Length: 242
Ligand code: FPP
Image: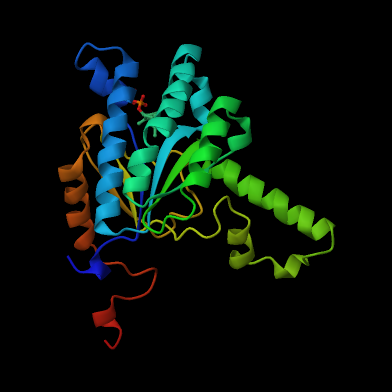
């Protein structure tokens, strides 16, 4: 596959952990644990392929509505993941990042997040970004508040507000927009993920639950992506003259 047909940035809505566990008569949380294996394998493969970024929707602003025990389990799992994957992150030259209302996460998670970000900041390969306590609408509102403050302080005039300025106020201004948005477990929804950034992303829905989404499934998605024709609202290159 030539580089032009490979996405630079893949974003994934990891869905179906509960269904994976339920179909095996296991507690839901076992699905989350198994999902970690998929995170590791998919991140490793994206790094090996030379992708610029992989962004994973690990915890949404809406996920606080889940039973308290499940939320606590997910936070502890995240803490364990951040500690146990450091070696893997280093070995694969991965730069770790996170987006979302991170300050509202438990301090034991924030501490490990900061450690992993700091430790990996000089790596030059794949950026592995976790969306945590993340919501697309929340991100747009947070950016709007920052712009409103700039206007109030007299640093920006309302006429100067354009897409470039807006993007500079998002959680990760330097991130390239996702080329490919993958959702697992067959759901056809965007679920408040990267609403600004996915404007022109190609969407690929896999019927497989996240714990079963491994290297082969990733390659299936990449194969489908390589056949898409991206026009960004314009015409296909071969049609420009006609
Ligand atoms: C969706 O499955 C998954 C989540 C809400 C959490 C995603 C978390 C993981 C994959 C594990 C933790 C990840 C990291 C990086 C630490 P669901 O529970 O909504 O599944 P269901 O729709 O089948 O019930």
